[in-house]
Image 1 (cartoon, rainbow, N blue to C red):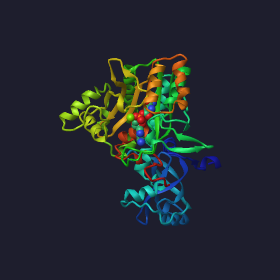
Image 2: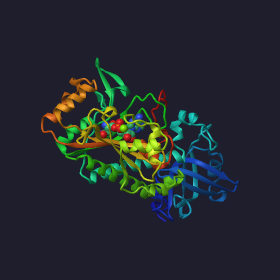
Image 3: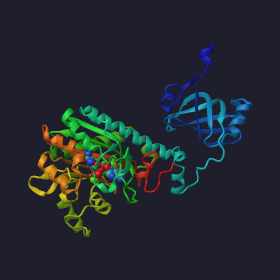
Image 4: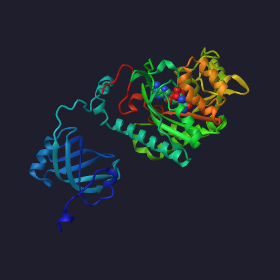
Length: 438
Ligand code: 4AD
Ligand code: MG
């Protein structure tokens, strides 16, 4: 055997391992778990894409390597060499028959052990908690969802517009703004990229943005984060009915994609996938006025003109196995830019998509006012500073056009897909009320 043939191939991921069945490989990773009888050891090694089991017989490795196997602890960094064996029962599909083992960095007193820990403790150790299989699975589903979003819009010819994070004005109401000093002026962390997308739609037709958004939500709920990621399409000449169709097609596409590509992760998260398989368009559509009627029939005391809270959303969406689209809300509690319904100017052409199983609003969107005089009046009615919106009014002044768009919070969508009850586990480092560590 020549030197190059006998040298193990360095491999970095589960996917790569499956291409080296029967061959000698070398990989580096972390010890997830270990069992040893004194004669044979089973080591779960975490690498890119999951964990792989390395099996080491005492007589198959050198004395020194066996000592390392004996002393290695959970979360130590290791180097493993061995032969890749196919193992259809293993989630990774492979196993490594160990011929060499080395501890690269020995971990002592790792705070997260296989026993149960409280959430407060785990949140304090979020940087380490990420290593657990459920957390890794949730983040892989998130990554898949983000890729699917980009693919969906790319395939439909939307141009990605990166909207600014530091902004001079509010988009979604002034009560949730994070204020910061901007060289003596006030600036705010962006609540939504929408206002910046509308001018871009006049330049490029169909556009979307996808980035972090910020809301100083003074409420402590499982559905609210201070910093969350939002994807927002904005389409020129798209009117309200087309917007509802787009939101429906988008969600149908994403759910199918997660079911197709994230099976293994959903299994680890013990997600009941039959619930997701039922999520096939068309989704039922009801108006706000119909929704109030349904809620009253169910004993909820909401009155026409009140905004929905979590309870109302849960009641409405738990009736069906698919998301429900609620449309045409009272103008009184919706954002200033929403187009009034030509049939009833008390309501606006806005939509909220409510996910089933208690996940609530995942999408909010609307047709936008494109009449400059009406928009100006609305800005005044909402007591917004006109100076800060002059540029936004320009979109109506120079070539006005009907247009519509929506925003979807990624964490809400991922929570629904993964079955996680709290948004904090769907983002690597959640920002919550009074909590910004680590
Ligand atoms: O309904 P919202 O406030 O709509 C907008 O911001 C529009 N400007 C979007 C647009 O039309 N381009 O927010 C949109 C979505 C919600 O449906 C929800 O999924 C998510 O953003 N969201 C939050 N997610 C986590 N934490 C929060 N505090 C959130 N606030 C909104
Ligand atoms: Mg909303």
